[in-house]
Structures are given as structure tokens and as C-alpha cells.
Image (cartoon, rainbow, N blue to C red):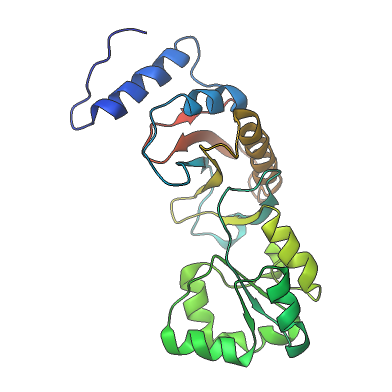
Length: 241
């Protein structure tokens, strides 16, 4: 590797990581998902308890102000995200204990709604609901909406089969939607012993396939402008499409 040049305003660690990525990209502007994951695993990572998160970023050619160009869907990552997912289940009385047994962080109906209404806080990652409970959620819709966890049939978080919804989410299902800038980003793993570059690559490929399938019908031009893989506090690497 050539001599590492410390970048202005950046740490020696970050500068060294930039140099490693430049070396990997010396013959191309992008890498395959596996090659990019291998490079990231060799970077100097922050000393986080469960390892740095691996994030996938999409730049899309959509107009986020137009409703017919919004992108919202879900994907089941083959190897999960490496993050413990806290699920809140809005279910009927007979399914409360079942939801908790299956791994829901919280489960209830009127009591759970009242708890969130009083606190105004969301301390979970995903919310699911049975259809009968959806008519009661408008009173906390703003709270759930701001946190991005409002149950939605389009993302598979509204349904009669509580067991299927919870098991699918815990198996690695994540919901995603474009932000105000028309981009999408989410975690596809971590840099720790539970993951390998191969597992990260398989998650990336599943995610890319899902986002491509979620292309709005009105978009006729190139839809995904670029895809980048990065870790917490590291430079990113463009993925070959």
C-alpha cells in the first residue's frame, strides 16, 4: 500500500481506512458485494461492544414529493441484521401471551395504546397489529408515525397470523422506505464473529433485489443510481450493479 496521507479534519484511523479502500478500488470504481464486504472487514473499526454496523445506501432517481414515486417495501435478510429487534404487538387478549412467548418485547391492546399515549415514547423497533386493533391506533398514530413504526399491510406488519408476523421479523425481516432526499439506507449486518463477508454479501444481494422489485411503475428511466456499502464511521464503497 502507498504511503498513508492524513486527511484534513480526519483521524489517522479514518485516513488509513480511506487508503485501504482506494487501494482496493485502484482498478475499478466499484466492487462486488463480496469484495466490498471483505474490504470492510479488514478496516480499522471502532471498538463497539457488538461490532460496527454494516449499512447499505441506495441513491434513487425518484421525486420524493410525488406519491406515485415513493418506495416502501420490506425484505427478509438471509442472515438478519445482527441487531436485537424489539417488537410491540397490538393484539387481541387471546394473543397477548402468545406474542410474548414468541419473542415480542411488548404485547397488548388498550393497555399498550394507553401506555404509549401517556408517555409519548416509542421504545421498540417494529410494531405489528391485528386488523381489529388497527381501528384503535389512530389515537397514537402520530407517535408511531414519527418513529416510523406504524403498522402497515404493505410491509407485512398488519395481519391475522400473529405467529407468522413475529417469526418473520425475528428471522431478519426489515421494512424500508425512501427518505426526503429520495434515498434508502438500512443495516445489513455487523462486523463481528456472527457474520462473515459471505453472509454480508448475501444480505446485500437480497436487499438490492428487493429494492429493484419495489421500483415505482411511473419510473421509466434508470431507477437505482448507485449503491454503497459502509460501516459505522468508515468511508463507503460503491457496489457494482
